[in-house]
Amino acid sequence: MQKFSFAAAYRYTAANSLAAPFGAARLGAAGLVAVGLVTPAVASSQPAAVTGRAASDDIVVTAKLTPRALSQVGQSVTIVDEATIVARQATDVIDIIRTVPGLSVDRNGGMGTTAGVSIRGAESDQTVVLIDGVKLNDPASPGSGFNFGPLVAGNVARVEVVRGAQSVLYGSQAIGGVVNLITREPTQQPGGLARVEHGARDTSQLTGNLASRLGPVAASIGATFLRTDGISAFNRTRGGAEKDGFENLGLNGKVRAALTDGAFLDLRGFYADSTVDVDGFTGNGFGDTEQVSYREDLVAYRPPRCR
Image 1 (cartoon, rainbow, N blue to C red):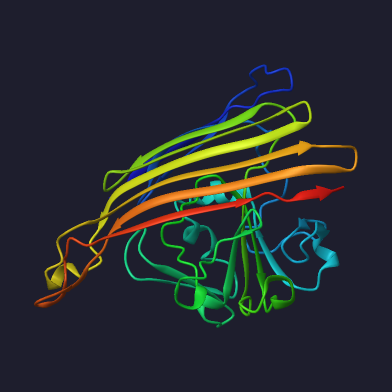
Image 2 (cartoon, one colour; image 1 turned 90 degrees about the vertical axis):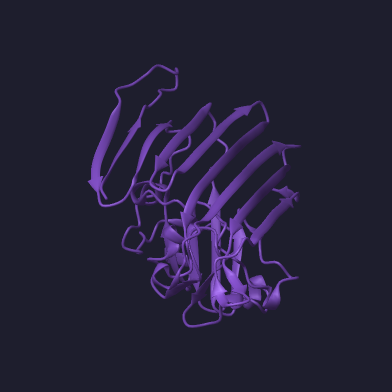
């Protein structure tokens, strides 16, 4: 089955006048229809890292907890920037990071089902996952591992993957490495992004983000919604017929306010609510069931910082 995809963007100058549009069209074996609105205020300034390699002057935060040029850190780091994410037309985070060297992904079904990420052969529960620097690993889950399954790409604009033990900075769990998901940053000028996608299996995704600055306060707020009829995780040749649908609503926000000449307040928040149909064991063994898995994530961060 072939599908046609189209992406278009418009650029705004500082005076908010409309510049010339640019776009690209692609015909593939599977896909979606997408229309986007992007301003340079939310576009990443980093070069693409399609091959998993980055320039030595790229700035990374995850490796040392402070902004450092890549040439000044000794760890093995891969950067996936916004240009690469857009080019891949990634739907979920797994699609963004599955090509990172030294990283492997395990998933037990279609979109939204349980998925783990291992780095350099370590267990999946030995990978620390951050979003905007806030730890997502659930201490109540077995081994405190993180389930990547319901995590959609949405407003993720950059991913930094640090391979190798990072326990000094991130605790004893960071044996394999660290995955840091970074959403769109606040901007000096008003800017926004809107994207609508629809494709096979009645899959639809809506993504939006607004960013601006007003006096001493800068903010970036985004939302994403994804739903799909999905596929049956149970083999069709063995009787699997029921589709395992998936639905996700995500919200993210960053607010930075200058308090004094020497300090500012940094607020960050992330919320996700997802539902996915799952197959399981019945009286006749493993097969289609009406079981549904619910998941809700809420993380927030409010540290006062000095410049």
